[in-house]
Length: 273
Ligand SMILES: Nc1ncnc2c1ncn2[C@@H]1O[C@H](COP(=O)(O)OP(=O)(O)OP(=O)(O)O)[C@@H](O)[C@H]1O
Image 1 (cartoon, rainbow, N blue to C red):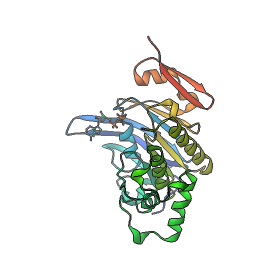
Image 2 (image 1 turned 90 degrees about the vertical axis):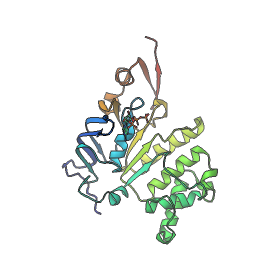
Image 3 (image 1 turned 30 degrees about the vertical axis):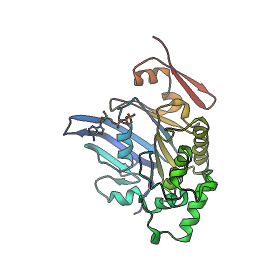
Image 4 (image 1 turned 180 degrees about the vertical axis):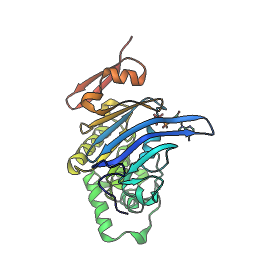
């Protein structure tokens, strides 16, 4: 499948474009997302922020072609969802989530290899020498060289997070989706992962990323754009400089929040009314 630089919507450089998208569940009457338009371009690094139940994971599932919108259109890598074989399209999107199943007995190297086939279990006849070498190189790049032969289930959560990212990068995606990648990490592991994401932004200038996060402190300095969601609705979106601030965050989370920029990173805390 050829993936063009633009989308059917005609926006050159857009890797993902949602127009007037909504997701509703007829069975429960729930509306995880309501009327959202959003464009992610090559080289942009988005943070997706909002309280529990705001619709972040639902949005990431749309972006990863894992689900379809109820209304509106999603153009991903130049293809409109609903008109193409999404299994092929998914190969160009790296999706990282702690919820993804990984066989714990597989080595880190094998887990990364499964990124080439997008499978949970390895398909051994599908991995040539170049793919194996690339898996090794990616683990090195993510600082996991010592883990090549270690069983995934024996790796720490921080190590597992970086192995999952190496796996997602194996097919050389143009869009990397990270669903709460810092979940469960201690401070050093979190900072190692932040460093890795900042390095990726530098080494792959065309790669676009979308990171779902609950904590402002864990946002890498490479984050360039932010989308604030509340009750399935976009409250604000755009470059961090003009979008991310105490007032916007307070409106998003429904209580007074003080946001402080600390160098290239962020610190947020609630304030007593
Ligand atoms: N398949 C579904 N059927 C019914 N309701 C759903 C479904 N999927 C999600 N929802 C509802 O949609 C809303 C948004 O869910 P979503 O998981 O996208 O939020 P989130 O922002 O990722 O939340 P969290 O931060 O807690 O992970 C929630 O109220 C959820 O209960």
